[in-house]
Length: 352
Image (tube, rainbow, N blue to C red; front, top):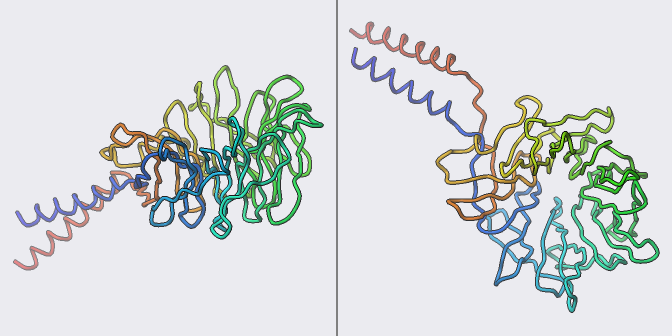
């Protein structure tokens, strides 16, 4: 009978270990911020190097490379496509803080996008090398404007605005559809969708930060005095507000083609999907890891997530790699343990 009891404990231990399997493992990227990730485990962001913020790329082996600047002291990498092209913003040489949008590739290095503006920023690039961002058009417009640039040799297109004032493009999908934010005629900032012409996504104050290939966009909307992460289905016209996450500082930052959404709410990174709703990412990793996950900036098609937080109290960038999901309830585990124990007991009786 002692053998049966020992076997039962071993079985129970195995099942409990399976039940406690965490959905993500954390990779410490070191100091800095991680803003984007492609499908080949390449990550981009920024890191303080010799006292200045520098644009960096982490390769598949998590080795960090400083990709340089446009002549100034600092730069920030914000997105990377599956061709390994990186976009972001950099201080230019001889300026008093003016920045220009750039594109970097391994064969030509960092290059100014050449936007005809006083200053510019690039936020997103798709696999067709189409880049979006914002730029200050001093003449003849006199306002900040969203732009889209075909970096494979095409021209730059100014996207206009919802209220003939300020606008900025934040992301572009594989079809060339763009989301961002623009001043409206009511004096408030509104999330927009652009596909040849600009469309207002939200009646209240709002921002859009990402769009997937299914024309679903994410961002935030001002609801009852709080910033509320929002998910807009552009084709159906429906919107989901993650009201449980509403806070003074909350937004959805990224969405993949499976509809998984990440972001942050008052210093806590979250993951949302239609099956599980919104979940604090800290609950999906080992609680003894030493991490605080503050903001998730991007999620790719494999479910990998990058962002920023603290590791043992030190500000650090992170990568979350999916492990596995164990959905079985405890009752099923106990049923399995009981079955195995009964079978073992019968076997021992036969031996006797």
